[in-house]
Length: 131
Image 1 (cartoon, rainbow, N blue to C red):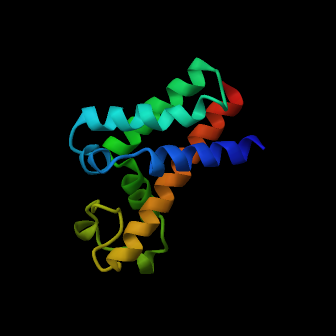
Image 2: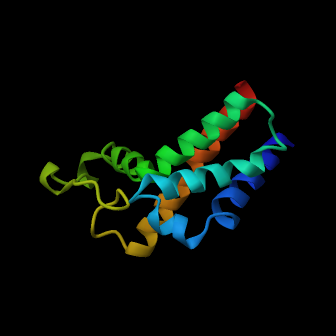
């Protein structure tokens, strides 16, 4: 039951409570990233009263979103592909999504969003369970 609560809190915080301003500006400036992370943490209050868990949830959310870390995770994961699927190093810049430029844009964006959600959910679950 806690897992469902964590999922619902994540969805509410990341999608219902995030304003257009936060979504557009959080990768450019810290203030919108912290505003989003603090509002993101609100739905977790009924799930855990652990200050340490809430701090981990809020701080990691701000850092992951501000630096768009999911794209770096995707990029690193794609470097582990079999040699036939890897690009020469000169073509492997970390794009906005972490995927090569010939990936259909809609697919690259959705795969990065899924990776971002998975990272947040793993961290949040660990924080609630162990802190």
